[in-house]
Length: 296
Image 1 (cartoon, rainbow, N blue to C red):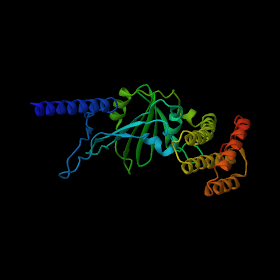
Image 2 (cartoon, rainbow, N blue to C red):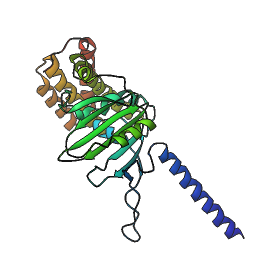
Image 3 (cartoon, helix red, strand yellow):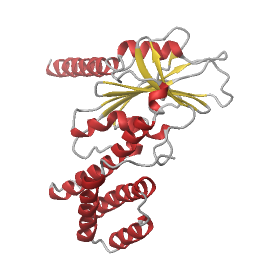
């Protein structure tokens, strides 16, 4: 009898856990077909191996991870799935990342479109901002389309591959996800996106963010959440970008010398030297941030 009760209890726990996970996924992903786009479902390929395909969950900052989104003080959750097209229509992949409300979230909109810009923050030619069903979203065309927006502290990306750019855009999928996660991007036009004022604001925000990232990384040494070498490497990486921007937009022709000095500090694990330089750059930025810049 005890064995039967144990088995029954275990089965109930498994069912409850499965239902809970499913409910969590359904909060972020649409777990059904969207018109002719068929939900990718897990499939067994090899006996004894886990199924492949279908919805996936990970502890990850999603698409922002490649752009320095800081996560050492929190954990973000990413949800992914693909919808299978065929018959001349694309197979879009959907990524929804739930950010946790940390102070890193103030950079979500800024970080979301970094790879729609060149190294120095200028929007690429195929980067556009468009209204869809009363929502503002960002899109980028290159061997397919990449659509992105934020909804509160969620970042949504829908993308598909189409080298010939000949397939119809999966607007049904985009609209379905906008209905589930309405965009909270302020209304703007393409002319505004490409205006000098918007470019200038983005460039200065990136310089701000890079110095902010340095402070966040150095704090981790105090909190024993990262080793010194990692902190120094990440800080110098952001400082180098700050120096490149400062040289290009503020006409200070010393970026190469400063970067060589930082590289020397990094090679000798000289955290004091790196931190001294960081304070110097922050002091300079406080004085010069409001100055006008020359755009290309």
